[in-house]
Image 1 (cartoon, rainbow, N blue to C red):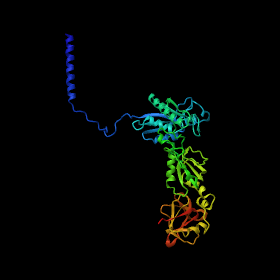
Image 2 (cartoon, rainbow, N blue to C red):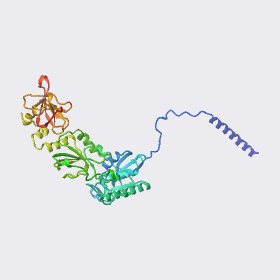
Image 3 (cartoon, rainbow, N blue to C red):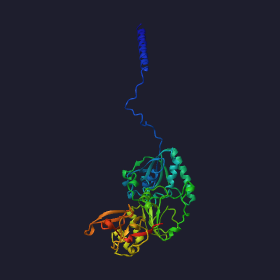
Image 4 (spheres, rainbow, N blue to C red):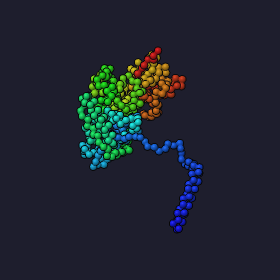
Length: 439
């Protein structure tokens, strides 16, 4: 009887639970809490892939990958070492230069495979350096600069081996030796110190090492090695800028700072390192940009790395003006002699403009010229936006100096004693050239 009592009690309890559950199901759905913002993207897994690549100094490698569409991030760092600390100060010590256990300078490349495939990443990798060089890239010598691919999966390894074999065939056909690139599983990646990240962006005055062989996976894109016509570069004075075949921030910096606005009478020509046939050069051609000053096809002097506007025009001044009164006026802030030869030539020119002798920028117009009787060219105003005025208190005088905005060279001074209350721009003729106005 006691057993039947327990069963009846249990059945009664189950009935109560069924009734409560039915009542709960009939309740209206709970409202979304006010703290949840449905307009924000919800958490989701990002379908990205990552691989670690070593191709010499990681500064330029990082920047080149960052410029590729589909690459989400590129981080400089160290990998594939053992027995020492993964820091720049340690791996660059002389005793580790030939240490096979030294860490390699590498870049961790994160990319979206829906936009760019691993095969494309690796093809770009091989094309951007010389994988036949063992433990070096150009003048960067040591095991830290070795060519290496560090994969994260068997699939990545297979693609890397296939791309390497394919590139070897192309290199062999062009007379290159065996590829030295190691393909290994990634153990651990150590990000480099903060000052190495985005190094080229933080240090705008430098160059991009370019050790590419010029051999391409797409034969139609392969660098032409002998077809460039340089006959015009063998005549007179020329400026040749060695440009990167791919992206180089220093090249872009030089173009923005100098080349895009340059209008000088000495031609400026851009070439890649594979397009210099027939020229006699002394400066190595593996850095971009490299600025070469040539005469009759022979290098007079050159500079590896980008140049500021001031640096370029100082070098151009040496090249074009040499040791002359014009150079002294332009850069030592000298002054022409009164009624000098150039003044006598320029005081009565036809209608036209006077241009900066180095940059070619228009500075003064003959329509604003007048005879002040001073023995120096005089104008009531410059071409708008062409000059910079600054205080000059040398020699116990208070004057206003005039400089060319384009090149920064010294032009003269401005005084308040021009005709009809206008200014008098007293300008040295030796730093100008004249261009007649086209009818």
